[in-house]
Image (cartoon, helix red, strand yellow):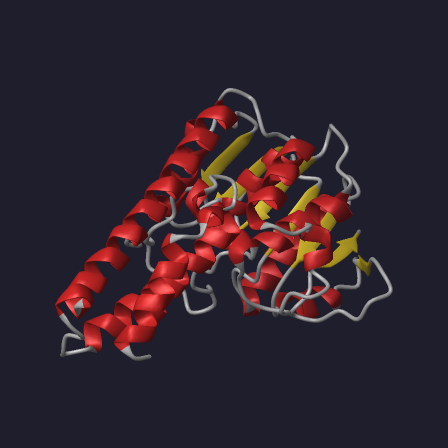
Length: 300
């Protein structure tokens, strides 16, 4: 992109009032991506000026200043939302409405058009809410069958809440909870009691800190190996392929034993779905084909 064209694009963004509206997070996210990858990066690669009035250096300063202004709007938005959530606002349907307003689309209909795998602006929104910047250093060595942490796409959590139709006495358990996004979001959306089981202490500390910061007293996290964790309270379980092989078989046996005491529901996402579907004590829910790219539901 020539420097003159960059200057035109920069003016277009500077004069766009929509990206400065606090709740218009999606438009601002698009603008920030465009600024970074199409304007700022390109300007950094240009080695010559285009004249004293519109030099490359001046354009870069303007682009970076706009970037900082938009990031400040996001920071203020998420700070306000965290304070309001801590005070008891934005729970249940109100949180869904807030998220839909910020990302600019009805979340249920979005799933019809979203890619089977991957992340979108809804994940950017929740990353901002939970102040996710970088993963902490892990302190516990992973066994070969354990899968490296990967965040569950946020739309999957919204879908899970819709499908589960939680009763007030339900207890949700995320097996391999990572940084805790699923229990935290699920509690905001449904109010149900939620537990996260995670082996890595550094992840547990962050997740518990977010729960405390947001005042989500019905969400707790336990540092434990999933093979020996306490599942006695759980009625609805979720696994985003946290492990495989023999370890998965051992955890499935633990859950099968729990199903002898009460009826339980399992939700899965990722490659573990096909393995769970082979469990004779579970029955798939719904007419759709079970595959790794869709949320799957099973009942004991």
